[in-house]
Image (cartoon, rainbow, N blue to C red; front, side, top):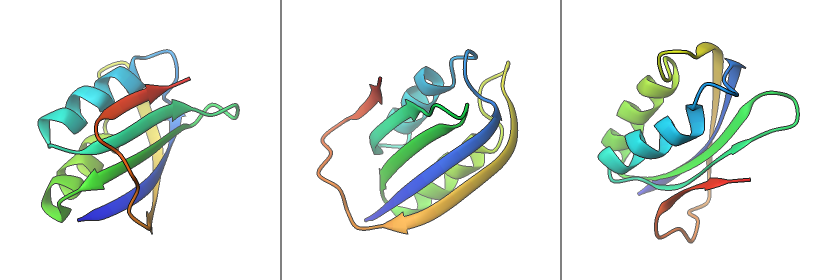
Length: 89
């Protein structure tokens, strides 16, 4: 198990990025959250098996159809206490 803090930049707000991230995370059996940041980026914490996280990161670099991702910054952090993948407000 690993836990990643992911910051996705570009046109990632107002394009259903968080909801799509939740769907993708659930498909990969990941837990954590997705949250809009005041600077226009999306913050994600995703925890799960390394292979699933790699697939999720690949998805993050594309995002949903209306998104335009310019960068994905990833940092491994200590394991969290998540039981599901949620959208934070």
